[in-house]
Length: 217
Ligand code: E4P
Image 1 (spheres, helix red, strand yellow):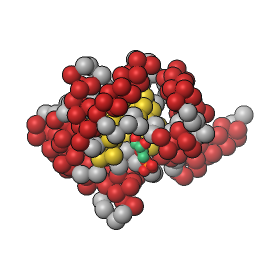
Image 2 (image 1 turned 180 degrees about the horizontal axis):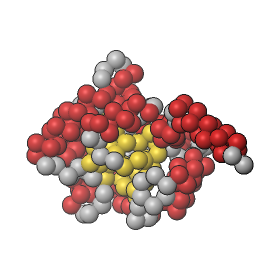
Image 3 (image 1 turned 60 degrees about the vertical axis):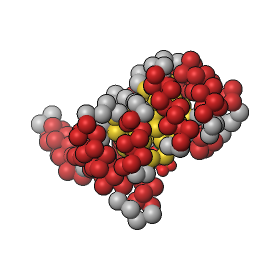
Image 4 (image 1 turned 45 degrees about the vertical axis):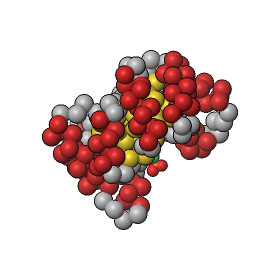
């Protein structure tokens, strides 16, 4: 299972990279704005800065909602760095753009996916990644993990290569449940990754080992 961090914060990206378990980064316009990164040139530079920190894929989202605009933006994004994956929304022109990018060998992440049907379309268009937003489904009392199971089932039925990127992950149980279901990737905040480290028995056990070592010295 790949671990992506869902942020545009360079410090957090560096921290996750230093842990040695990071496989990539996802961003979106809201995450960029949260870091105060605005204006096209600053945003493009920020993507390059992120690529220089991590070894893996970095999703960069198009802002256009029409086919021509998405193609122009996506090609520009893809040329920025070999690690860039073009993120396009699950709308009609987004599906057409994903198909276009797929045919041109440009890797894509189909974002804002909330149903199995949408995920099926993304796979048919050849998306490299499909991003079902599990946290946002949970927010409206709909089981986000159930969507991951449905997509896993459908993709396995037909051997689609599209990787299931569980997005809008909010906490460690989302990560563990996605791993059990067989999501290929999860993207979440640093807290969800570092939260996996924690267990009180580890802390108690370590304190005891260190205390016992001191007794013998
Ligand atoms: C996915 O790529 C999105 O950036 C992200 O996971 C959205 O998560 P949120 O629902 O926590 O904003």
